[in-house]
Length: 256
Image 1 (cartoon, rainbow, N blue to C red):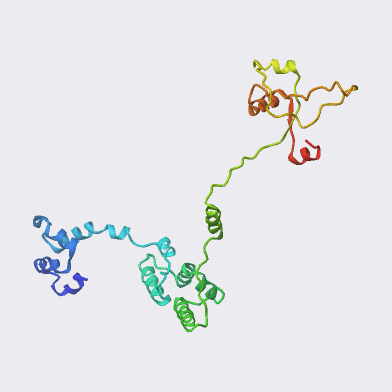
Image 2 (cartoon, rainbow, N blue to C red):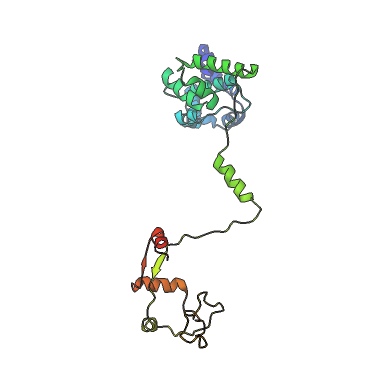
């Protein structure tokens, strides 16, 4: 812009260099003051130095992904958002075609505008802008209702469950039922454990079988505890083929 305004003085390098600082502000003005005058002899030298200093702005130019990520603010009208979006889209290079422009803009709208526009397929961006302004007018007059986006129901349920009674819920671990075949005494001794049998604190619920003489009844059977953990004992049974895994429904049918 400075070069175009000073085109009548294109041959006067000293004048162009001297007044160029008036078009700069902030960091650019500080950069200009720090230049070495020995390296700036003509206005072309100054132009090349300026372009090399601020060429990074070309790499920071907006692209289609940034355009698609734009959204309308809560208190922003449709007209203000459309104008802001269109100004940003004009900076993209190469320029977007009208069909692609309307398609991308439609996808950035919220559910209310999208549902009212997608079936009508506006021909161009101007038609979309007019349609959006009419929708805003209908909302202001009370003829249309613009509902807010509902929150995720799964998150709400998760919060309700976590606040129930204020107590942590018990955690249950899945298990696989097995049909256990008890080994004989010799097999238990082969496991390499020295059993220290203890009497159980609970008695069997099944009464002892009746003898021929009712006066000589056998005492109730005391169940001795095994000398290893049940989880380890289960693995040993599976390893030695003393037990076979079964499905849950088969175990229930078999009464096990």
